[in-house]
Amino acid sequence: METTPQQGWREYLLAPVDAASLVALRVLFGLLMFVGIVRFFLYDWIYKFYVRPSFHFDYFGFAWVKPWSETGLYIHFALLALLALCIALGLFYRWSVGLFLIGFLYVELLDKTYYLNHYVLVSYLCFLMLWLPLGRTASLDVWRGAVAPSSTVPRWCLWAMRLQIGLVYFFAGVAKLKSDWLLMGQPLHIWLSTFEYLPLVGPWMRTQFVALAFSWGGAIFDLTVVFFLLWRPTRIWAYLVVIVFHTITGSLFYIGMFPWMMTGFALIFFEPDWPKRLWTWWRSDVQTDTPAVEALPSVSQDRALRRFGFVVLGVFFAIQLALPLRHHLYPGNVCWREEGFRFAWHVMLIEKTGFVQFRLHDANSGKRWVLSPRQYLTPLQVKMMSTQPDMILTFAHELAARFRRKGYPGIEVYADAFASLNGRPRQRLLDPHVDLARQPRGWAPKRWIVPLQTSASAARRKS
Image 1: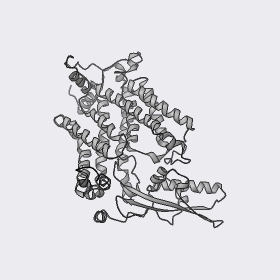
Image 2: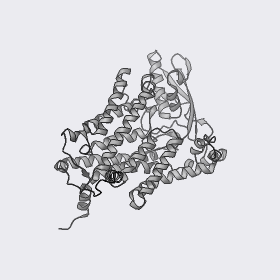
Image 3: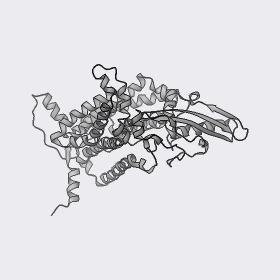
Image 4: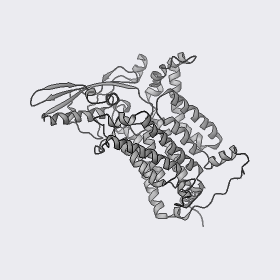
């Protein structure tokens, strides 16, 4: 009987492959999460970010997510650290991954001030790992007899993880196809200039040529590295470039654990048995023959569960394809307006500074106030809010609510907000005549954002 293309693909994706690379990623993920959470304790970020502030910038639709008490927050983070270790060890694997995902999402939803791209990646990886049978190999679950051991996984598991990492690189490259990045070398020109003190290379760091070289190199790297990693003849060389690229960015720019995460996770593009081959190479006395790939346990052949999982993952990846493109539904420059900016892998695209103060007017009594957000927010919250229109709107609503509780039902809130993007002259960010207290939050375009005035070419001449 002739095999149809659909049947061929089904057989290919369901065929067993060595689980070693995915298990290595599980261990790496758990250990990195443990280290990341320990850093919150060591740098006192739990108190600075979630206990000290009296107000938190919630995400639209998630105002109901509130922080625990101080003790509760410390317990929460301690449990996250414990769950991260359980993931690495393969102990209560699915429960650990699921609870870690819920606990991590809770922390991220508390305040958008601390949004980072690699936090989004952590959430995506956690959700994906829920559907992958990574607790059946090199795990305490196998050791204690809770699950049937298996050294293989269906091939689709491997490709799902490759797709996840590939989407990050690819859309990070697409996001760089902007005039600021490719024609002005911004914001890298601004950032690299701060390293002019370095011996030998310092003077070069101030030049437009170096900024453009870094910018074009970064865009080309993001757009092509996945394809070179997938092709066996160029794979090892591409991974060496991955190491160099992320080492440089991680050393020069403070972007958290993102470079180290991507360096480790890029190993998923190697052959699925690479950890075993590496161990064999390290222990040259060990038998070098690669064991035959065993059949998958019968539990993974449950068609109903598999079909449901494919539907869920299909929707999951469809959302990831849509989110980075949604900014095209909004007018103007996404780096200025920041509508559709988050969850789109806009990595290292902007150097944006701003200033904002609020003017309040009570229509009933005629009283007026001029307020600085520093009276209510932490310095980091003020810094992040001053350049992001949706956060300014959120705080304007908070000010209106506070004054209404004080007996001013007719309160109006206006913002004098100014910002500078990628070295351009500072200009108004918001229309100062719009009462923000009466502007709805949501995903609709914000007509009260003042369009970016200075063109890329003009900004380039001024830089």
